[in-house]
Length: 396
Image (tube, rainbow, N blue to C red; front, top):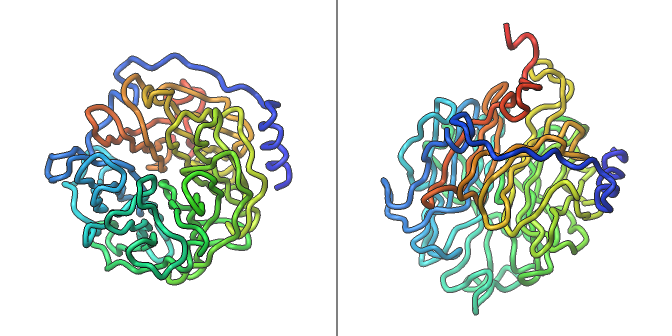
């Protein structure tokens, strides 16, 4: 996969194909116009704010998770709340609590995975103790042995596609480096590798730091369906890597695209060994980085006939000011992103993506009226009819 890494380095110095710009979609077929409510503060719940969405396709059931907050702040006695859809995102269940905060703590950074072999939905998240916040006067402490100051990492699992969840399991010691006080899983879906020597491995990418600011990329991974976890090495620090998104590359490599705090372009890095180590962290000139998280998903590989034997990665983000969301698509494993289209004008902040069915990708995002919305995105719509996203057999 050296070709991919060279391409990212070329992109870092601007030697890449510029993305095609499209005018904002204003017709009623735009994803924003079709978006439906998933989480609404105060509707069927008691939360003043609901933020930081994540989504996964669990064998045809869409599972959406977010932070249910008692106030707008990042650490506001947050619960992990869940809603599910069994009809491709057309309608959603009333929110339920997957796991509640305890003792004034705050739960955050939801990261979902679906293990198809075990038919198991996994949610990883972090726990801030009461009074501790990422940027507040009392910040998390390094190490593992101060329960009033240290940040914990936990998983819960569901065997019925998000309807019921297990009790939390503390995995802090195998998912956070001891000298780092701050860590964040995603907030984006994790990756289940489908190719290469680590096929079946679960990979959760993190940004991590001894203190707020000088972050690096790392990953936790499991080769036994989430029973136990191992922690990979740290990437180089730099490019102010912050919230991360990940996708599988051919051969089981992992691409991470990161928010770049204070930077103008997203930071990217590639792991050639399933999350154990990371290559150079470089800025990608095709991927702008306003001060907001982004979404990323693998839609198809070039050896999947039902998707037309084309590689497709899809990226979601917003314009400065957290508005006017847009999508990009890459046909060359993220080297360039020639397809770009507005999803429609309006408030748009954190977003996540997942494949729904051939021809459709789902987008869960923070949008109008402080709601978290879901919109189906047709590959045909995204490409103005030039690519249906499916093979010929699927059209018969």
